[in-house]
Length: 585
Image (cartoon, rainbow, N blue to C red):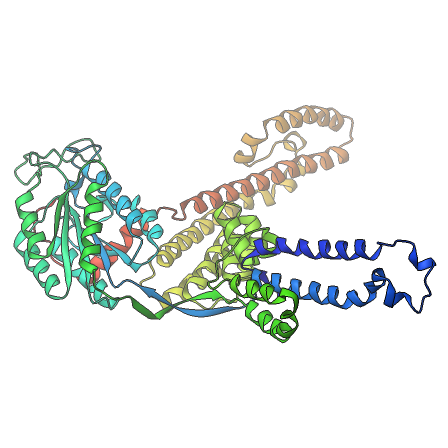
């Protein structure tokens, strides 16, 4: 019952009728006309109407109770989630985004790559039914997102995609079509659409064959072309332009005729990108019309949790009182309660602390950017740990991730350890992740960084130990030489403590005068104190240096999604050991 809330809390305003009902009862009970003082008390109930108050009390109490139950039933009390099968349209779409170097050409503003991103985002906004996947391709094809209903995740990754993340250049549209067909078949989608957002294909013949094979499998292939026939140079990071093997500047133009044949063989639609979203609207309309006559598919393997309306049980409680409500128009009240009973649960969010579960409140706070507040609200341990980590409370996140046995949980556990500076334990956690999932690139990358960090720390400790060894015999040597007691031997500490050295020189002169008078014992003690100060300063400086080194290492922890995609694609490309074919752009 901890998750008790109401699906329709606006009906609770009707509870205000109950106080009004009892106010009416109280006013009727005080309607005295003075006859009670004149009529015999034994005859009063039979001759005075005002004395019927006691007999009306049970009726008012019953009406109040029934009103309360009716309002609560209409408000939809819920405290349990139940799995509900989903229904979705069979039509699915996989977008193949071209990330070849030619997409950097600026014959369209701002360039082909940015325009492709804008078109992708426009398409994702229009995708309300069915599932969407994303494949990127250049000299090879890679999956960014499998088929999913969450288009926001795909949109969030769009800004991280560019030609620089691809391990090999080219424009293998045929490989993109093949990878898209694999995604559709893995999702058990009997039909669907494939969209190539591209400026050309390295091998048009292979692309046409792949499009025809996709059509035979039940998937249409459409093309959204970018660029102009004239083309434009391809700028490089060093400010120059891309050249071919002969040293000539490459001017990749748009071959519309070739791309039209690919779309025709794939049974799809060809459109050239234009200003506005009319082109993507036409593509979406094409997929929708192609889906007409197709029945909805029950997602038996895909279910989601839904709050179950328990108000029906309150309606059953009201049934025994149906007989009473036949009198004096009470049946109309019962019928109204049954008619107004909602049929489909709709989640409401009114007065968060009363009607939302803690996890729902936590998600709202997390999306609003209040990670610390979300960590306090969440009850789900995974969400609570993620919010704590986002808020910088790594110690709390470490405690929550400690019980996780999943790959992601152990990986996040290692990240929390690394943030807390517990490198050996973090290394062990990353090694455990790699033992369970050898292709986990993030864990491998962090593991290498931590090992490098450990080596740097060991070198620093060795250097610090070598600097401290000469200082250990320094007080004894200075004890026999009063003229050098106030001067430290460590040069690094001397540079940081110039003011202390000047004070030491003044005291040294005083010590020389005292030595001439035969009072050498006290200068020796002062010399020891002078020597301790630079040593403490040196230790403090070493601590600061260690802290700065740790902060620098933490900043090196990858927060670059594009870099993660680059390493992942490179690893996958090495595994495939595919030979590059076609142009290098």
